Length: 49
Length: 331
Ligand SMILES: Cc1cc2nc3c(=O)[nH]c(=O)nc-3n(C[C@H](O)[C@H](O)[C@H](O)COP(=O)(O)OP(=O)(O)OC[C@H]3O[C@@H](n4cnc5c(N)ncnc54)[C@H](O)[C@@H]3O)c2cc1C
Image 1 (cartoon, chains in turn red, purple):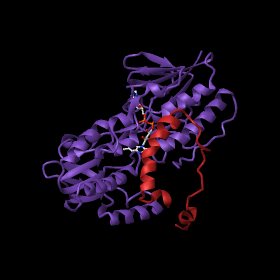
Image 2: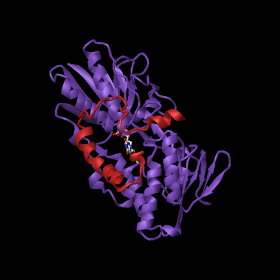
Image 3: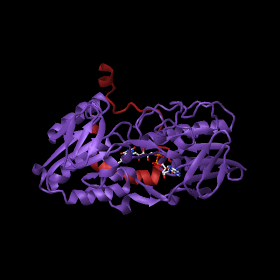
Image 4: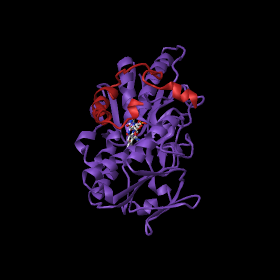
């Protein structure tokens, strides 16, 4: 659950995302396929529930 | 000339206007985007304004600067959307007919929907889901020397469901930095059954709250706010007292959708969750916070929805089958 961790890296990434929002997202830039990506997700934990 | 009209020049509308301008021939298609103002806020930045981490200059821009050339920007409040007549009406700029309509008018907080909340707003009760609210909260936090800070979600759905917890964590950091954390009690009062909606995230976030000494009060459906006694009450009669309340009031879709009779009572437009189209409206698409789709109301979701719309709208224009399906994910 790296993305959920309370780390300085996560905090800085969140602050830096502003740049991506204004410069990439709003322009309509394609940032990857629209279907959910499984990489980095612990799907096994969800299945166990 | 054919007409593509887009409602709302926030996150979803701006993305769609720019995407469609890339595809559509300027000699064949006119693109018009309508919004009530020319201010584009980076809303995730609202979280950081009360703590002095983000400034107005950093998160507040104009809408026009993000729209590509060849997109007409109309600044006027929408007052009616008529799917039968295929036209939308604005308060000051007349009526616009369309061949294709894309709607992304988002949602907004309504403190006045909770008994006592609207009246108490600004008197030990603050929020951060609008820019002016963030500015007031920043001043109030700077003057807060100790006591009980309650962060409360009135009801779901809200935009960015994790933002209230992020606020509580930032408050913990902020009071530590000011050297008064031991004088401040932080309580997170939520209508959810735990810290968050999903079990995996809830487990991680609950333990983070424990480490930060943030108390979680779950299953609390806000009924009223008593500004005199400084108490919030749930429908089942549970009371939580506060010295400062940071409230996330009920979120509603745009009032014009309710007035036009095309939304549910909360202003959210019913659409097919995979195609994002209202029933029997083949030339209308809705994205972002303004739909009734059971997914997070987040810019990240709107971004992936925009990719689906881009593909399907182009297929519709070219008379082809529409294959793209939204799965509602944010990441
Ligand atoms: C505190 C906070 C933190 C957030 N953090 C994140 C995050 O970390 N990650 C994330 O993905 N998302 C986050 N979000 C959510 C994100 O900002 C929204 O989901 C996103 O902006 C939705 O896009 P939208 O186009 O649906 O609505 P908006 O971007 O809100 O745009 C709607 C537009 O419609 C216009 N409009 C509405 N009614 C009318 C009318 N009657 N006439 C004319 N114009 C009208 C408005 O003026 C506005 O410009 C956060 C939101 C908040 C408040």
